[in-house]
Each structure stands twice: as structure tokens, then as C-alpha cells.
Amino acid sequence: MRLRVVPPAPTDAGCGGCSRRAVLHGLAATAAAALVGCPSEDTLAPDAGPGSITWACGNNLCVDLNDPKNATLTKVDGTLIVIAPHDIILLVRTSTTAVAAVSDVCTHAMCGVRYDRVNKILTCPCHGSKYTLMGGVIQGPAFRPLARYQTQLDPTTNQLTIVL
Image (cartoon, rainbow, N blue to C red; front, side):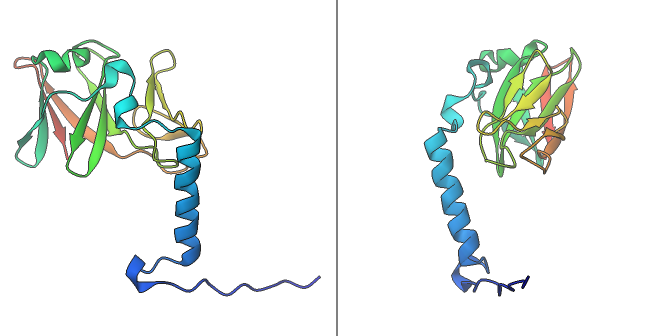
């Protein structure tokens, strides 16, 4: 039995050094995701719609939970989406005093993840990846965790700070 050695694919400097194979793989994955019907930002679960405009608190983001647009996050198991400068963040109220914050973008298929209130996990509707509320992978095909953000909830002012 002879092994065939395949030379590395040529790279294209205009693509930051990525190979043609990588570009074609990315295009194929994008086309497959479109055919499968991966949800976009505007097809999120009803209670996970975008919250009101957040504002910068130094280098962080702040969410006013007194604003009616953010009311879903005032109850345990409530969810809210906020747009950060370099990510879309899913917030989940895990208790009366805590809020979990992770990237809403699945590390496998780039689809928006959903909060499963029954099992207290995050799932990707595109290919079934499952994550903990801390972003860790429970089940693939994803193998990288979701980005995780620290949060600080001030109960006296009902303000949530997301540390970026």
C-alpha cells in the first residue's frame, strides 16, 4: 500500500494567507447553512430579542433593567440579546442575583444559540451543538466554547454591567 503525499494548497495573499481549499470550504459551509435555514439575528426566540440600546460604561456595556424593553431579563430564565462592538451577546437571568453572558454565535455553524429553559443549557438549532450557560461544549459538532463575559448586577439601581 502506497501513501500519497498531498502538497499544501497554494495560498492567496489577498485572503490573509488562507488556502483555496479553506476559502472553498468556507463558501460551502455558508451555502449549506443557508440551505438548512440557520436562524439570523431577526429570527431569535421571542423573549430573546434585542434589548434597548446599551451604553458604554468605560470599556464595558451597561443595560438598564428598568427599561421596559429589557423586562424579560428581570425574571429568572429570562433572556436578552445585546449587540457589543465585536460580538452578539446572549444574556440569561440564572437567579435573582446573577446573569450569565455568552456569545450568541455558535462556534461551529455561526448560528444564534437558544436557551433551553428545561435543561438549563444553550443549543444550536443548525446542527445540535449544546453548551453550558458558562459557554462550555456539552455536545458537538462544536468543539470550541462560546466566548464568556463577566457580569455585575447592581440590585439597587437595577443596572447590569457586561465586562468586555
